[in-house]
Length: 336
Ligand code: TRP
Image (tube, rainbow, N blue to C red):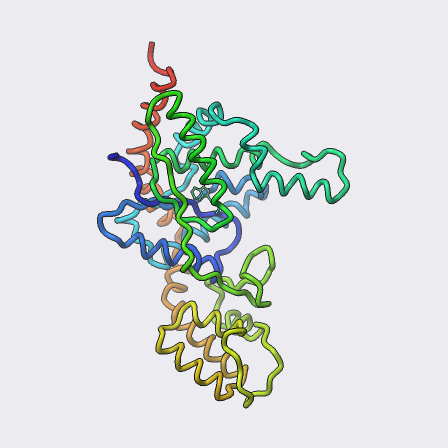
């Protein structure tokens, strides 16, 4: 099908991007964005962020930081289409049409909604829907519209999003069955190779564990964070096991195979934790030096980011506008 995206994914705009986001989502997407003959779409899911955050300044700041991060890290915005969800008015319009093709029962089964109800139950609240907004409840429909709007074939996501992809397929299938074949059924692309990075305390690096290393901390702060990474209490000269070490796990996500081999050898020979930390800091700092500078420049010039995002939105709407027209006609909404 023409006018379809080979690859499309949404980027959450809550919080400051960290090393784990980079390794798990940003780096693979940037690599894919450089591929020729593949159309890839990346967008900031800022409508979605309203579900969790009602602080306007945090929303604005987060969109700015996330956009600056992707650009500073080298997203190819000529080859890929990079835009804000809220710049595409066709998306909420499609969301409504799809809502009318989505059974409420399907949404009742969504993990995020069920988790929120379970939380109310655990707290002994009588009303299991307490503080659950319609935004949270119908989140999967908006996500389906994001994807179906561009007839995306493959959607790179974390494994927690597989259910949302199944729901998107379900909704698309129901629409196609009723109104004819308009939508491509999207597939989740969950890459088992993609590293899950450990955080300061050895658990998965995640904003909710408060154990992250933000990507663009100033040098001094980056060093301080790395010094805080948890290790065991083996003395400097004692042999150490790289496989169970958070420092090594983080190094592994960036180093080349030969650098890794070398480090492994030094672990077995006995290397002090202070030395590993210092070297990990220097390694990451070198890697982040240039992007950090670009990032800081972009944060100071949000107008430049706006221009890039506007261009992306224009390109996205070249597909979205005529396609939505077709969908509206398919359901009977048109000039009389
Ligand atoms: N829900 C996704 C997440 O939490 C983000 C997202 C929103 C998304 N819309 C999307 C991902 C469309 C892929 C396609 O990670």
